[in-house]
Image 1 (cartoon, one colour):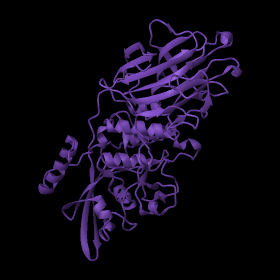
Image 2 (image 1 turned 180 degrees about the vertical axis):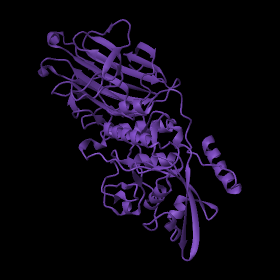
Image 3 (image 1 turned 90 degrees about the horizontal axis):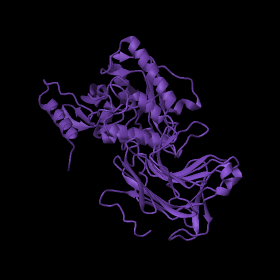
Image 4 (image 1 turned 180 degrees about the horizontal axis):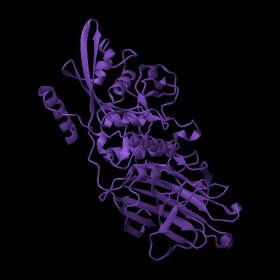
Length: 506
């Protein structure tokens, strides 16, 4: 079995603490060191705000995996509890993060609510668990820094990043005014996402258990509650990690062993014995390659595509695409503006995306505007192609596009909904017909190709990862002119220097 350096160091520290109790050997959260240039809390709140919940949580996971966690969260604090069980005294020591999980730097961080699915994923990644109700009470009692809760009136916005950020700033303002330092145990600022045996007794769908948010008097705002689905998280939820390694009566053990013990579970649980004390994590989405030829029966990857506004339609079309069957996917919003369909993960980095797109040169309606078709890669999760929605959702990606009025081809980098053509001299592909569009993203090298020829290969690091897909944007004055992007033979696959395909098939 192969262990990371951080895991080995953590295990050694744990063993030394057992054999040499006079030494101070605190456990440390096993994460990579925070990198220079990693995003701050302020930067992340702006980047996460426009994303869907699922896209947001993929980015959060990526940030944590890369070590973008402030230093004050890394040294774990010990909690010791003693109980008499069956006339025998037992003592357990466990180790918890001093504060709720946050992203960013020491001076600019963001306490981040998350679903129990993501919380469990992070716990697994760090050899940790989530606390029980009894443990939350014990942590509050042991915390030298206690704050009163600061609720925000409930609303539909309480599950959004702007409200998450507002509450974090409220907590930080109060903490600073009270002179409470970062590093020691702090409590009273969030409800805890906890593990509870009652979660497994609830009918479908899966649930999240929350508890806590104690007043300084010791009374919690939130009793144990399992009414929300496991996909839910709001501003009040906090994630406190607990190391899986514990010391039970002076002997190394694990949280799982204790919680599943028929009697010793009482040391950590006031709800009785646990069976598998964790949240179930759904299977990850299918990985690459993503291949869809859009047959007449419907999209082959129907459960994996994410549609921006409307559902693209399979339509019969002539002329047939190269190697096609006479059916294509049409992406458009007949009410106007942008529409897209995308696939893959916001953590996908090195891959190519390609598709045949029908380029319909329509100079006859050029006076009334045009439509832009294309493919995109490394999308941040908004699916907004190369623009901004009426509601302010911003596109962030690389795209290869074609305009129907002039045949102009653009190699776009879109940031905050503002597209920039990376070509120094405009390129054109006039005439009507099928063209093979291809985007390759390998590290910071972005390559734009059409019909087997490289239009541009550039070094750019604005977008490091994201999903790929098919985009459409109409610029007509009259929506009756909308045709849409007609696409066939879509493929998205991992790419390395040894796997870049030859285009001889075209």
